[in-house]
Length: 266
Ligand SMILES: [Zn+2]
Image (cartoon, rainbow, N blue to C red; front, side, top):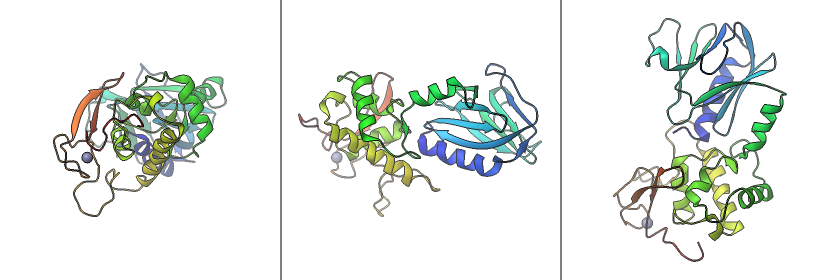
């Protein structure tokens, strides 16, 4: 699943190649809306897990990769690695075809229009590109979500803060030593903020090249603490890592029962 750092790297790549450039056409799968002829790209940017291609004429193509989406780049005429029917967006520039396959959705928005502002408002602060506003985050969390909400669901809720995906969810709970079934109501403001501060640090630390990393010990025993390590020994205490499908949106969660034992104070 693409996480915030993936989207930022992708947006930066597309921005470097397309900003200020004319494009020959921008075609959408008919289920997503109209296609365009020649246009000029002003910039490309990520907002949480959404990607905005901003055109000079004021229109914005916003897309979301969901669980299965991906972007590819091909030379014109080069065979594609996926069937054409799975193409959600085809952006043709002078020397390259940029193809987004299997987007969850894509839609046109007016740059200064109400819908764009409204959508931005509904997304929380982008953990990579925007400073964390502690007061606003706490207010959103406490007002939007019932205290019984599991932290596995809280962390994935992009209305609080945008960028945390399923990998970081498990890693953050391990690093802050919270059991995955810890509820929002059981966490102090301080503990909640610490999770998001660490999320911002990890997401930013992963903007360079290379595989995603939340563990930085130079011992080659693992770049991640728990994610994908079912039944393997915990890298801190040796207890076998557990995996279960947890949460209101059922997603896999990995954790160490010993390091993340539920406590009244967690
Ligand atoms: Zn452990």
